[in-house]
Length: 250
Ligand SMILES: Nc1ncnc2c1ncn2[C@@H]1O[C@H](COP(=O)(O)OP(=O)(O)OP(=O)(O)O)[C@@H](O)[C@H]1O
Ligand SMILES: [Mg+2]
Image (cartoon, rainbow, N blue to C red):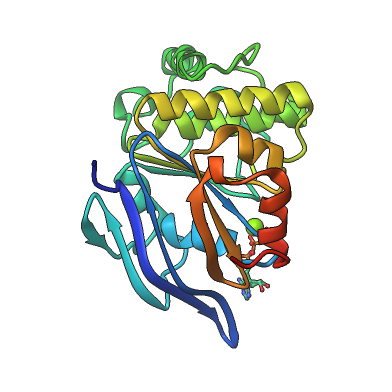
């Protein structure tokens, strides 16, 4: 059996008096999609922020490919191949699709943004288009400003950016929110492609049929604790719902 690509052991996170995560342990394997579910306030986004370097856990250990890590910033985690799409995701609306795809990558692609002349701009448009295309996202013109896109198209750009850059792990916090059925289906397809590429994917959603469709395993959080960690095939939407709300406690 392969080793986990990303792992947390006995992580707790306190915000002052609030315990948002309480002794959470979970593993993510390469080529695996893990669903992270739980009611509002269960601690999902807090776990995401610990995994992506936004927050440091109060206690516990984070291991990337078996090595203990103490992220000091999201940038550090990003450099190590961990991409995160936050629930309150940050696209810059006034910038073009292409600029958004490359936002924050100035150091990794000096050839492109080092000389931000007209030609560089064009090259960026083309490469952004190729990257989005590679991960299966069709955005009409990557030189268009993000503020001119629909909500669903913006979400697609944000996800495409994350999948295009992810080297090891991709964390998606409610990526199908506010999407129509077709767009949500496309996002699920992108997740499947990421899995085929051998990435480890953490997928967070309140839409349980989406979770059932795309995940291999589901971790249920309740009040900051893991109450269930089992293969998706062991759940139905009904038992998953019961486990989330606490009606089912096995
Ligand atoms: N920055 C913060 N400061 C203080 N408390 C916080 C902070 N962020 C989250 N919390 C608290 O931590 C707990 C977990 O919140 P978190 O955002 O992780 O939940 P969630 O599972 O993502 O919920 P949702 O499904 O609503 O997005 C909640 O009680 C919340 O109020
Ligand atoms: Mg959340």
